[in-house]
Image (cartoon, rainbow, N blue to C red; front, side, top):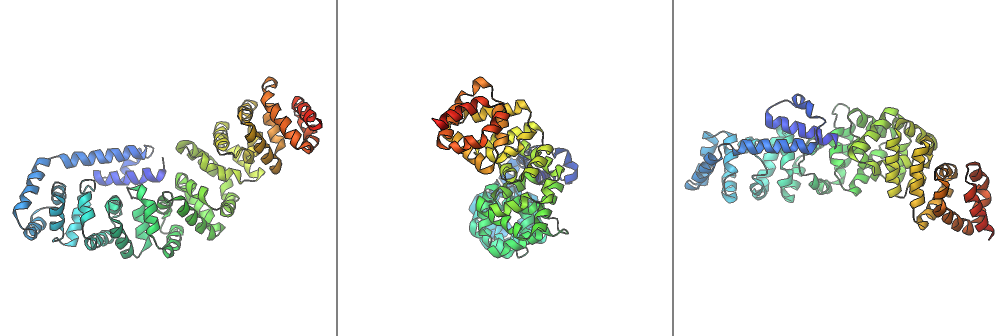
Length: 438
């Protein structure tokens, strides 16, 4: 589960309970979904207390003109009461009364609303009022409330609000608390291109400390937007990429940054892979831990597959064998095992045996393609180490593949026979020679 999601949920729960986020730090290892469930359950309990009274008060609003009801509401009731009453009113009536209230008071009421109960009211509210209330909330820096309501606004209201918010810092701070994460791709597409460089500049501003906020949006964007933003960050230079890795380590943001790195264009990704900051053993250990906890092994593949042999050796030393095996399982599913063979030297004979089982079980066509990729990469030696782990009696299927490849490419037999025999693979060499000369 993303550290960012957990952090945001703790802050939102602290708001409901009237506590400081630090008082809920004991929840920092609790899944974000569980914290959200606790928050929503607490909200339900608070809103259901005395509900019959608020239903009666909502009914009385039908007896008075909307203008008079709005006046009495602002003068006689606290915002929390108005919020509770609004949740029990017909949508049209609630919108009519709200339009007659002052913007600062509506902002006060908004702070007390449960958006799940008033979604239709929000969607039918005139966009001018939505924009003005939003700007009042921005003035008060009420980013949590704005994030909760994003999923209930119409597209037109969102566009008007975003256009009115000229300081990108506010948009980033709201982004951390957006409840409707499935709306983020659409929201990002609404942002004009000229605003993205300013987002990235803010994220790099050490005085603002907005890396978490920026990544909370990037991590939920669609693949194309992730690539665009990741490449833009790379275009800022190696120093910017290094800061990205350092802040991800300091704030434990790997669960959010890995999806972005995986989407970067190959040339930008390659620059990041070879940075000294990524070779830090603590960084590598954090990456493997995150991949394990959040099941992000497939997102680790582009990083490891792009490493040099020396960088792979450093990576292997930073991870325990079980995590390396899980990385290989993901590579096997993505047909990227040849690119990771540089890690084989770090495996025990038993672990190589597991890899050998994978190799032996591959369909013949895949085995041949695998061999072609290995030849192109010059990785026969680690592959022979894997093949040696297959018991002699279990090599029959592999021998069939060897015969086919040898028949098609006899030059490989001459090139590799000596190395294979030195690794105890004489039976496969004999099969290959027979096919090559037959």
